[in-house]
Each structure stands twice: as C-alpha cells, then as structure tokens.
Image (cartoon, rainbow, N blue to C red):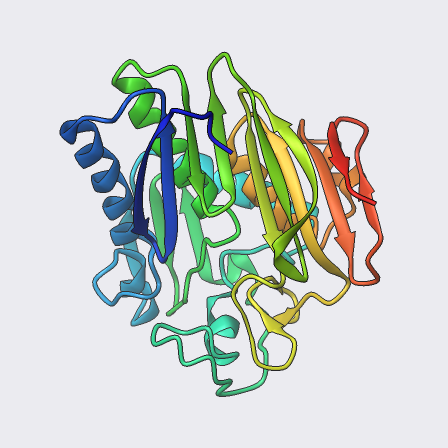
Amino acid sequence: MPHPGWSSFSFEGIGTQWEISTPDRLGPLVRHQLLEAVGDYDMTYSRFRTDSLVSGLSRGPGTIALPPHAVALHELYAALYRLSSGAVTPLVGTSLERLGYDANYSLSPSGEPQGAPPWDDVLEWTGTALTAKKPVVLDIGAAGKGQLVDLLGGVLRSTGLTDFLVDGSGDMLHAGAHPVTVALEHPYNSKQAIGTVELDNSALCASASNRRAWGDGLHHVLDGTTGRPIRTTVATWTMAASALVADGLATAMFMVEPARLEDEFDFSWLSVSAEGTATFSTGFEGRLFS
C-alpha cells in the first residue's frame, strides 16, 4: 500500500487500471506526460485496436519501425524464447484470438488452440526494426505492461521525482527512501492475500491464471509451442530491478524451471502450483500466511 498521506493519480490505460502514488500531488504537465506515454504504448503494441502499429502486421507482411524502448523488449523476449524452447513468444496472438481473447473480447472460442510458428520463420526483429514475413498477430502481454511501468517511472524521474510507486494493477515499481508493504493476492480469491512482501527500490510483478480467465479453464498464459493455457502453475510473483524483467519472468515461470532462469537473470520469486503448493527463492523476503 502507498504511504499514508501520499497523493494518488488513477487512470485507465491499455485495458487495465493504474495508480501513481507520490508524496505530493502531481501537476497537470506530469499527468499529461504519463497519459501520453500510456497512449503511445497502446498505439504501438495493442492488438485490440486496428490503428495500432503492430496490428497492421496481422493484415499482411511488412516492416515497422518501433520506438527505442523496443530494443530492451526484444532482448528480453529473445532470451526467454531461447530459455523456454519457444514456449514464451510474442507470436501467441493467433491462439489467444482462437480461444476467444480477441479484439472484440468475445471470450468465445472460435477454434482449437494453435501453436505459434517458429520465430525465425515469420519474424525478423533487429533493434527497432520489426519485419513480418507473413501475417502475424503479435502479443507482447508477457512483458509489455511491465515495460510500461518502467516507462512511467522514467517519466516521473525526468521531472525530478525520487519517491513514487507506480502500480499497474499489481505490477509495481517503487523508488524512494521508504519501502512499501505489498499484499500478494490469493490466486483463487482476489479479496484475500496469501502473504506480504516489502518492496524497496525495485519492481514486483505477478502473473496468475485467474486474471483474464474465461470459459472452461481458459486463461491468457499460453504455452507458445501448443497454444494451450498452462495448467500446472496458477500464480507467480517476481522481484527484479526493472518491471520489464520482472513481468517477463513472472510469465516465463509458468513454463520454465526457476533455476534455469536464475542462470541468466538476477531476481527473486514465489510460485504457487495448481495443487496449492508454494515454493520460493531464498531472496524472496516476504511473509506467507499459514
């Protein structure tokens, strides 16, 4: 929770709720910059709007020029794609649409799950240049919200703010001299918590099968190799220096053993299996309720 007495700026963007907490009320210019950053990100990456930059690639092959921050997004996705043997991929959009998580939010399956095509067969992504060799439905949901959390933190820092909490519906970035205690949402009851963790100048991101879930066992965390929702894990939390990395790893932990990810990333984690068993890293300094 934010510190008592702090001011909050709340708004909706990229289909989720945001809350920016700061010691003092944000001025109109800073608020405008934050909203503009969210709008620009949505206009670039949203597969739910026909006028976004990436949506054009779903209608035919071509090349698009992405913003500079796409370099970091590409690097993370490329690493997770390799470590997961293709399970974590930005090419899961087609299967999400077939399962009902489409631009119209129909939530009604129109076909069987479909594994994503091999990255190299359909996509060339070098820095800010992205080329689709054939029509593709890109979905960067595995790490995109986390990156936007970081970008909003960058907006705040650019105005001289050093104390803040950016909260994108549970994906958070904290900065300042006073840590905050965050409740960890119960994967089966959003009104309950399974524990708490202290967030101190770092990012905390979560991924859960109860968020964006519909139908009979359908949810948004898919195995890219099969196009099917993951059944073995129900919730993960990760803490890292950036929300981009924390968000990507929270998704990857549904498909990759933590030890494999720890070989290349500096992060701490908590995972809850479908059987209700909680496992966590030694660096995840939280408190789980019995």
